[in-house]
Structures are given as C-alpha cells and as structure tokens.
Amino acid sequence: MLEFLKQYWSTILVGIVLAGIVALIIAKMIRDRKKGKRSCGCGCENCPSAGMCHKK
Image (cartoon, rainbow, N blue to C red; front, side, top):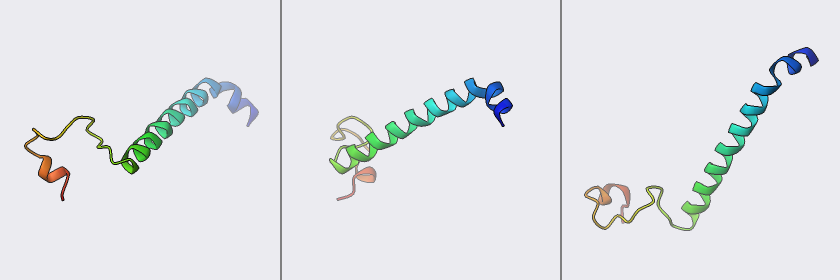
C-alpha cells in the first residue's frame, strides 16, 4: 500500500484538489439557489426561454 502511495501521490493529490474545487462549486450553486439567484448568471427579462426556466 505504501508503495502504491509513493508511486501515485501526485495523481492522488491532483484528484483531491479537483474534488475540492467541484465541491466548492456545488456549494456555491446551492447557496445561490437558496438566495433565489439563477444559475445562468444573467437577467432573463429578454430571454425567449424565460418561461421554461422560471415557471411562476
């Protein structure tokens, strides 16, 4: 097991960093959703598909 970790430590480290970044992105999306912000990041007043995304 120790030999495996020695051989692939850099790959494991990159995977952990990427997983952390993905977790932060998902957490921000959840926080924004709870605040009522939309994921598209722009105003939807001129969007032809606004009715499909934001049903009232």
